[in-house]
Structures are given as C-alpha cells and as structure tokens.
Image 1: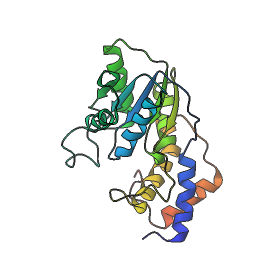
Image 2: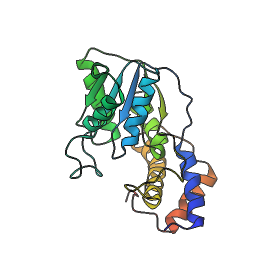
Image 3: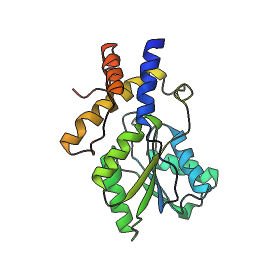
Image 4: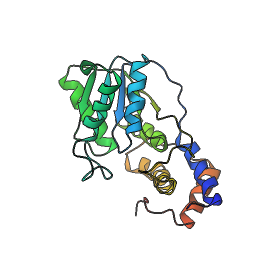
Length: 215
C-alpha cells in the first residue's frame, strides 16, 4: 500500500505529466499502443465525436504485453474501435513499433506508403505519459502540429487490476527522470521542470520508487 505522503508527492508528478492541451480538430488521431485498452477507447471516442477523419493505431508488443497478449497492441486497439463503431476504412494500423520513437518512425513510413501527409495530429497516450510523448514528437517530427490527450481519469481513479497506484508512481518517477535526461541525448525537446516537482521526484526516489529509473 502507498502511504499518504507518497500519494501527495505522486499526485504532484501526475499533474505535471499532464500537458492539458485543449482539443482541436486535426487531420489524424494517432493512438499509441500499450497494455491499457482505455487508450484505444479514448481514441475511438474522439473519432466518433468528429475531431478527426482518420484514426491510426501504432504499437507492436511491449514490455507489459509481450507474452501476455496474443496479438499486437495496435490490432487489439483497432478491434476495440471497430466494436465501438469506427468504420474499418477509417483505421490504419502500424503494429511493429516497441517504443515512442518507433511509433513515430513506423507511422511516418506507413503514411508515406499510403500517400498521406497529415499536418496535424491528436496523439492519444496513457495519462502519465502525456508530457514525455509530446516532447518526443516535437523532437522527432517537428514540422507537424501535435496535441496530446489521454483517458480522462483522476490520479485516484486511474489504477485498476492491471496497474496499481504503486506501479503508476514508479513509472511516473522514471518518466520524470527521462524528461530531465533525454533532451541531452537528442530523444526529446527540453521541458522545464518546476522546483517543487523535482523535489517531489527526489523524495519519491528516497522512498524507494526507483523501479523504472534509467541506470
């Protein structure tokens, strides 16, 4: 169980990882694969609400789905969208990527093969990976316009049987470290981290939330 001190610190990281982009209509909705089918549902909802005329699912099998799911994340997500009423001809599938960089690279290749060149994207990701996804896309695909959104859950409501609040906290700590380190490696654009957010990170590291840190 996570204690109240850790909960308060983790909530500060949760809030920072959200970029809070207002929705705008875009040429394409790009849904990034994961173990969380709520991401697929969010992407399909946005299409059905008329935010974009095209829905792309990108993702092969990653750390949490390899050996667990019998089909790539993008295929599973597309099946969910079809059941929700998205027309098959409005869905594109990229099912080989295993990280955000590959999501971008392989989606670029897919769009080129289809003769498509969308200028703007709604990127759909897990809530605690909004900011890192935005920073990666701005670095790897700077000529495009992006906004990032995610399933609409509070910090307290997001955990479920598949991912506990402790798991989420470990991941958020690791992602904040990457937001600090990855611009120097050329993986992401620089983003300012407020002092109080970094202090919360350091306290969570001291409390043992280190499972997702880069060594």
